[in-house]
Amino acid sequence: VSRIVAIVGRPNVGKSRLFNRLAQKRISVVHDQPGVTRDVVHAEVKDGAFTLLDTGGLGLTGSDTPALITKASEQQVHFAITTASVILFVVDAREGVTALDDRIAGMLRRSKKTVMLIANKADSGKEKIAEIEEFYRLGFGEPFYISAEHGNGEAEVRNALLEKL
Ligand code: GDP
Ligand code: MG
Image (cartoon, rainbow, N blue to C red; front, side, top):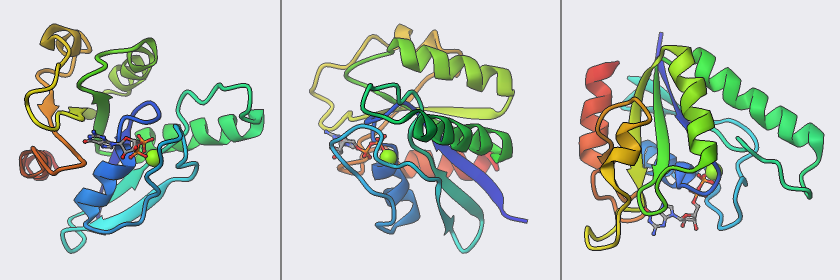
């Protein structure tokens, strides 16, 4: 049975970009508009070593989002958290921890699943990154700093992930 790895996080942090990188396919829709991935998207990775799930829609509370879609999206995320053995929790390295990140972190801590904290959008190593204490405070240890856009840190995440499966 293939292990399940789920990518979770608030809209627009780069979950789908990371999904496409790890899956080495362009399956998931990457979009400037937050919350575009409304269904769970999945791919077999490493010849079936694990199944990767992309999720979207967590925290979609905009006035233009129909309640049914918000509800369905949140259920997709709950499903992902419930079925996954490892969760990649993606945050934005530059924006730091938001209230919604805190809320998601709470859900993840309660799930007792293995969580890897991924601080994305660390593109050049020269941009202003949030204080590491902010990320530590979430309770998942030191973040992996990556750029899903450029590929920095991808190998480290991939290797650490394979060890945790
Ligand atoms: P999702 O909503 O979490 O799935 O986020 P997406 O993968 O759709 O990405 C949201 C936006 O962030 C898009 O405009 C991406 O091009 C951009 N993005 C994703 N990863 C990175 C990154 O590593 N660096 C930068 N600068 N932008 C990124
Ligand atoms: Mg997405």
